[in-house]
Amino acid sequence: MPETSYSVDLDEYRLRALLEFLDKDETLISDTLNDALDKLYKEIVPLELKEKVETAKEYDRNHDRLNGNKFSIVHLSDGESNYYLTTKDIQSFFDAACLYADRFDDVAGYYTLDTMMSYLEDRDLIDENVFKVLSEAREKDDRIQVEVHYDFDTATLEFIELNGEAYLRAIELLE
Image (tube, rainbow, N blue to C red):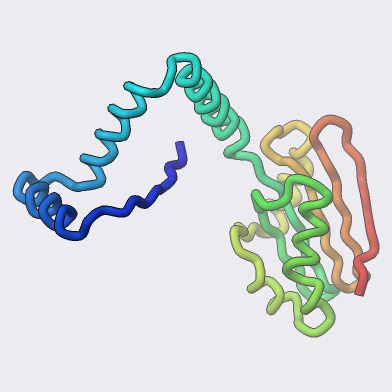
C-alpha cells in the first residue's frame, strides 16, 4: 500500500536527546514512530472503522493487481517518421486527447516527430512488428486497453477502444 508522510513539531533539544539515545540502540526514529503510531491506531480506532479500512486496502490491492499490467498501444506518425510505443497513461479517448493537448499541441508543426518524442515520459518504445502483433491480439488480450494513432501529417487522432464494445473515433486535431 502506498504510504504517506506526516510532519510533527518537536522541541529541538528533546529531538536531539531522542536521536542520541536511539542511535546507541541502532534504532531508526522512523521505526520507533511507526511502532508508536501502529499501537495508537490499534488502541483508539474503533473495530468498525478498522474493518472499513481493511476492506478499502483489500479493494486497492485487488484493483492494482488486476489493472497493474494494463497498457495501451500507440502509433505516432508525421509522414516521414513512425514511432510505436506502449503506455499506461492512455485509458480513454479523453486521455488520448489530453496527451496531445498537453505534450504536442504547442510544438506540432514546429518540430519534427523525432523532437516531439522527447516530450513523452513513461513510454516503452516498440518496433512496428511488435505493434502489429499487439494490434491483432488486442481483442483477445484484456491487458491491451486501447489503440491510438496520432497522425501529425493529417492532424488526426484515431482511437480504438477495445474494452466491451469495440469502436473507432477519429478527430481532427486543432492547430
